[in-house]
Length: 174
Image (cartoon, rainbow, N blue to C red; front, side, top):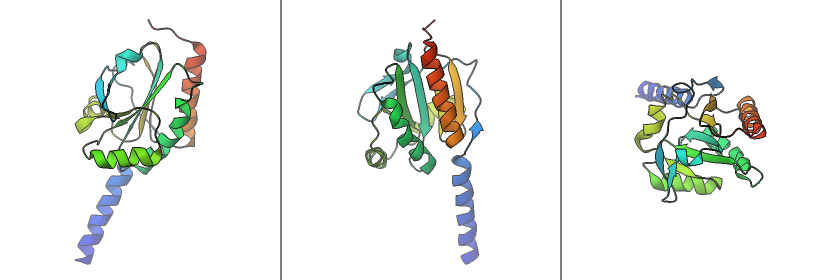
């Protein structure tokens, strides 16, 4: 019985580590155009991606069990500050089925930006993502300028550089 328990534990560790990747580029969906979607928010609202045309949008796909995701969500709060006027940050939870757990995580992390409910990971799967966290930066014209899987200091800097470069360029929607 001990051997069986160890095998199960080893399988669980492999599954968790493979889902929470660090520092891997993800392929951009389609031809670089962001796929439009509508998702409910944790605060009973609706988030329509196309309503944010003309702004830079950062979507971070995450799961409630992912510790790396939680670290990134906390660090992304700095981008929800007033000095980033043309920037929209949203955290897309791909396992919102246990709403109480989700609310507890968001409250504990004191998230000050929209949390979107990707029920049954529909958008996550539509974009052919394979790991959390995955972050997508979308420019003002609706084109994906950066997609990254995982989160570490290098990826954090890439996201920041991408956001600041796009905002500085002041691209207008096409």
